[in-house]
Image (cartoon, rainbow, N blue to C red; front, side):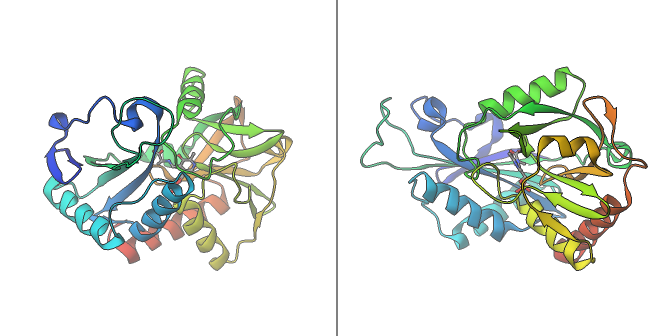
Length: 285
Ligand code: PDD
């Protein structure tokens, strides 16, 4: 199955796609992105991802050159061309190509890149047994609600977590939990899901919105509130959520076991509800 890329109006085999070195995404990280996943060829919650792309672009004054219908058609075409039923669709929108200078180029012509790659499902063992995580300081900028290309702090924290034998870093800023390097974080205590509220400190995850809604529908109390770091030591369950990992239990935090059985009962309810939601919206789970 081919991995492919769309660049400014044309599809290419992924390895043949290029952008000019003066693209501001390359030189400044001056752009925004989205990661969408397909199940059986159907993108999950595409509309929500496109809305977030628009809001990220608006937040940094990049104009979005395509309408929702045009994005949808392109993504459908790319998925079909790639022939990956389980496809990771990566959209990158930058402020375009211009001689390197900090000020916005005027006029600017945004660069649109979309890549389509096969995705390997998270290993079932990890879903059943959970993954280790570590707590690290959140060194990112003040607008993490924008899905910006500037991921250096995320990259460094993820690498530090990996080097410590963990799968994810749970980030803490000013004593409060924000999110993971590439996931949102949910704590469970006495049957209640606790997760930091939406703010500039974290991304409004598409999976987060789906999972919290499903949890509430299943009768689980969801408390969206500030989470002091110390609470991480007192959880019954801890799980990560995101497009690529779906719902993933944390088994150890800073090398200390989390709660009891993995996945814990609330994580299991949420995880089952998520699979049913995938089945009803995409025909696959
Ligand atoms: N990351 N928080 C951060 C910092 C993220 O990068 C992501 C997703 C999430 C979860 O968002 P969603 O449920 O919409 O995927 C939360 C993507 C997958 C990535 O950067 O690869």
